[in-house]
Image (cartoon, rainbow, N blue to C red; front, top):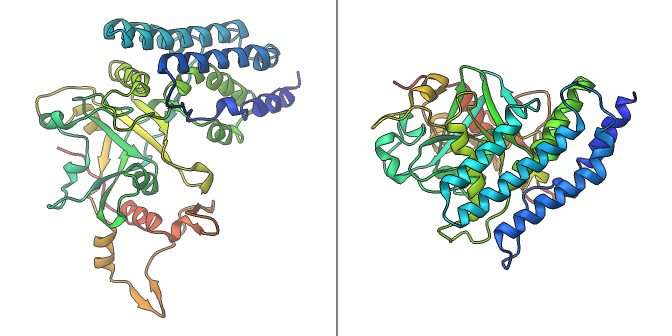
Length: 378
């Protein structure tokens, strides 16, 4: 069995434009019909292109091609039916159909869930208001203020959740490039391993598996291929940002609800619709959402408090005031630019502006935060 050839063939097909996310609609598209057409297109792509290759892979006895196709079809059907029911106001029925379809994939022989190691580094940002933020202000919205939790792609109105990102650059993009000096940042770290569903770009997925064992990488490919209908349904750009109801948020919100009610799952890892990933080199830029697991009338979720430690917040302005960098001949001398690892990280703001990430304000504030004390909220 020429596994290297099969790997190369699958790798090539996973680079096909059909795997490109996010997907964009035209203003005239009817969302249920648009999503159904995209999912149908993917099922056909699998049958015509991937299936002949996957058929050559007797990797695991239980993971056989007919089951993969069945999972793809059932997941696609469940997503489509959930959308149609939701549009008819049948929220409970929509939730049930979506949950049943997702359980069929997650708790079968296909397990498209990734495990995050403990002691990961995450960042969280907030726009600076009149009063300086306390450490607890940088955690999830406390239960007594749940009335301010609004709808968003992975946000259910009134349900607090902890939102973090891989980098301060990502946080800045998520705030629509808000003035960086007016953002306050905290660093967070998880004390235990976390199970998350990954809504991942195919480019990043392929880059993450290329250094592993060949057979393990092939199995991961099968998981990614099987779960892609969910990835697609969660990665559709909003047609009207000012609309109160955004149908593009239906499946992501149903997924968040599924995560909240499942004791085996902790959160979702998902790509940003605001980041131009082509301008990043070795700069992590994924979001994570961890919904509350234990509800209370005030304070914070005990489960999330026990998992995540957090630093006191800081900002670029505060750090520069503390450090008082010396300006000489037009250059600022400080601790900017200390490399964080052996892989050069680069950021390209515009054509001809490639810079080492560690020499930017993003890299600077991250390094400052990484030296701060992590604490558990009481």
